[in-house]
Length: 108
Image (tube, rainbow, N blue to C red; front, side, top):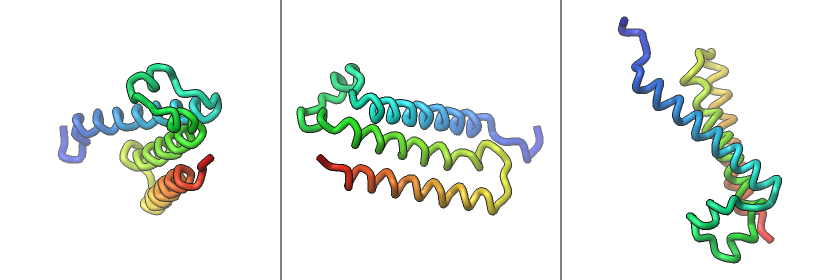
């Protein structure tokens, strides 16, 4: 091992964060497309009636939030030029702002 080798703990944490963000994207897209919450989610989260009527709002928010987290992890896992890393960071911020806008503006 040299000093330039990445720490295996950080690589594992980054990989876990990528997997979790993928799960959030898939879950958000599933909820937004089917317009139904998974039954386990309803039971565990104890959603009220008003919250159960907003699957598109919550699913889209989760999908955009997961995409933002996923885009943030790309420069940490793969070598990219500095300009591309900054562009990906800007894209992640835009996705985050889009997620917040989606959640706030999409009301029924």
